[in-house]
Amino acid sequence: MPELAISADKVAFIIEKAREFDVKEGASDPDSGSNAADDDEIDVLQDSSSDPVAAELAGFIHALNEDEQLDLVTLMWLGRGDGEVEEWDDLRARAAEARAEYKAPRREAVQYLLGEPMLGDLLADGMDELGIDWSDERTTPVS
Image (cartoon, rainbow, N blue to C red):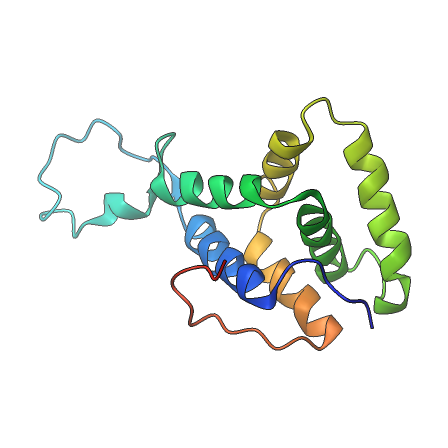
């Protein structure tokens, strides 16, 4: 069983925020001009370039150290079915090789992770594959 550089609490926070981000959809009526209360506040679930959830999630992932970011990518790949638990070291080495190609590793790792549909579910599946207990009840990260 691999020992993660990132805590289960941090992963749980990312899972929660990624799931909030994933439920949003592109703006379908950006110039409606109607009262939000009349629209049942539906615009709150529409994605925009100034999305505070995306900004919070990106900032949190950006602040992680290199090992924590590598673990996130590897967890996502594990959850996506790109390898088995027994292949953790190989998957992590592939993640490190990919990161070495980046010109701005922190920023590009964030973009890569946030660009993955269902990131929260994939991370949760990766944690489950490792048998690591996590809770999606957390609302603030543990430093």
